Length: 108
Image 1: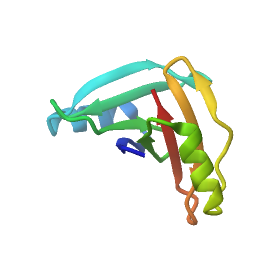
Image 2: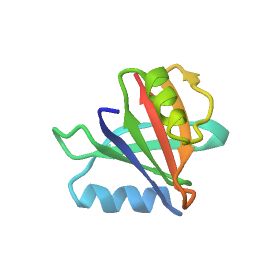
Image 3: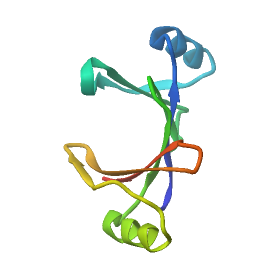
Image 4: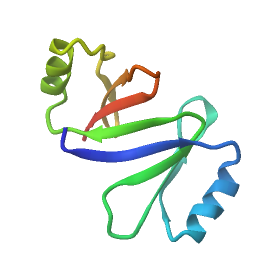
């Protein structure tokens, strides 16, 4: 894993949350259709690589250069990792921490 890429924050009103974060100085990086009729809304500070996504669930997405290697290493440590999911915008593998928080590896 190379860095924390996106922190997904659960929000109840995406437009209200978007306005709030824009007042804080964040900019919209991506606003596009997502699964199940939702919209992926990703925001970040100018010039920064880490960003937030305002969604209906929580999670942390960590970037990796070699998702297969990281998944193998995590599994040898006893961490349960889901299958690698191929998407047009990258490869993803989800897992949960002991409290049920979603964590995801992402290879571009």
